[in-house]
Image (cartoon, rainbow, N blue to C red; front, side, top):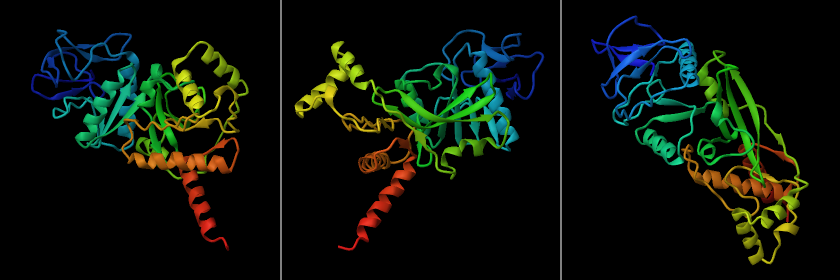
Length: 331
């Protein structure tokens, strides 16, 4: 904890002041807390008795404390009104940072269940707050999307599916955008890094919605995909057995199927079966927009076989251009 109440009820913020002595209590549960200031972790408060407190978890890592401090200072330098660990009694939740009274910033450095993530996200939305999850080291996006990471994806027309990361060692906020999965569920993406303290942080967080030069991503063809499928079926992998059954009922064979030049798709679209999954709990927009994106994506590559991947707005424009061209054709 970086905040506590003193004897007079005043909130003491350790990012702004470091008291030498005094009695302090937790702003949420009212339990006694003690100031700790050792050589490993930055100064912080900790509950004296490990009684249940629904607002804070004990034993925050040095990474978590350090990242909250860095972001707090960056928001302050950006001219924002920011509160660290501001307890919201109507939610029974304490965001790591509350910016301008409505933007909740959650720095997530440890794993949590998908059910708990959804519960916390929906609680913020239900009470009118926007929540932005920024991931610490253990949750960085690497070669595949874990179920928890899928639920931490955001979406915009200019950036596609995107994901935020924090790097305390390099002092960077990273945006991984234009995320696509291949037939094996491996991922590729574009990475853009922002140094802590450089520029206005709110503008940085709006990057996925800013107009910029059209991004693209070169995809690759998996030459060993058939061998991979054969191996998965030999070992009776449940997912691949289900897909093989779908193909069998259509009189097709997954092992001999031709998949074309594009073997990558946005998360939530299974290129093998065209099945859709739209349960992304961070998405606030109407999910029909996501379905339209998938449809336009499939139409474009059925008519234009190639290996470049683009943002959703590109496929929408191509769809409009195609309809306009057909409309204006002379019979």
